[in-house]
Amino acid sequence: MQETDRYFQVDLEHAEQAYRLIIPRGRILVAEDDRLIADILRYVLTEEGYQVDVAHDGMEAFKLASRKRYDLVSMDLGMPNCDGYGAIAAIDHSVPGLPIIVVSGRLNNNTVTDLRLHKGVKGFLDKPVDMERYLELVTDITSSRKGSKA
Image (cartoon, rainbow, N blue to C red; front, side):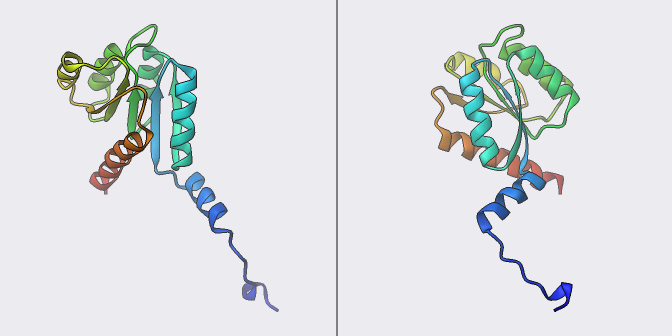
């Protein structure tokens, strides 16, 4: 039997996981000071095939967003050093066009109205996070960005 005649049985579940590692769906920055919530978001997004970096304060989020290419930022508002408001303004100025989802327990009509002034802000979610809605929003935004780059 020749080398080229060999057949390999593929475990589809492991093949899909390997594919996601090789060709991720996108790169996401999660800016969240609550380490448990950050870990949950990282886990869920990684399971969906995204590469994920985490920043635990607004300054760290701004620095990462300025240095690396992301498809999306998931931003909490109440963080130390530089809160989410300041980080959003800085990212919107230095990385125009980078979409941001605001995920916060501090959302109200005034906050949403103020944050809509930033072109990068594309969505809002209250805490506790509805993971189905979160993933739907992430997928919609990252898919539309990939389609517009083609």
